[in-house]
Image 1 (cartoon, rainbow, N blue to C red):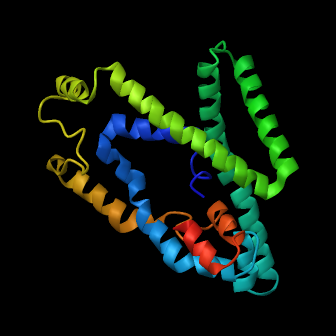
Image 2 (cartoon, rainbow, N blue to C red):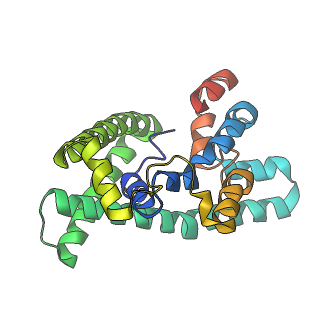
Length: 236
């Protein structure tokens, strides 16, 4: 489940948040831990108990008749086409940037297309050959590689600039001695906007977001567990 939500764009996106808003910029997604606990201790057992394969199937369990079938079809198309195309678009764009830079390929449209096609063909082949079980195994391997790479990159980057103390000095030179870049909480001295934004993160966004019940691809993992207890433990 963790590997499924960790894509090529994740480190890039988090880096961007920290550059723009400091460490506290991560509250944009840190607030999701509240929804994650709700999905773990309330919804995970219920998803598994439904004994379905995809979350759209729940529509015809909850409602009846032709209208339920229409709603299920609409949800399937809406999720698969606009939502997934947008999501896959930015993930593929991130992967294209990583591949082009890593292999020092020419920064041209044709080479970018080739890089994307190669990645998609490789992923398509092992998904088609191995099924869901194979996807889980490759997720595990790739996530391990991604985490090791991210940690290694962080260590190398900090050493490159002379260590943590040097980092603090350079941040102070760029943003002033009274900066809040390294603070865990937002700078509330900025006024009402900062306070309201943080309040929305903790009071609204975590429950108003799509998938707060563990729906979609996370629910699909819950459906694949052995029983309700395994569903809870896996989500936790």
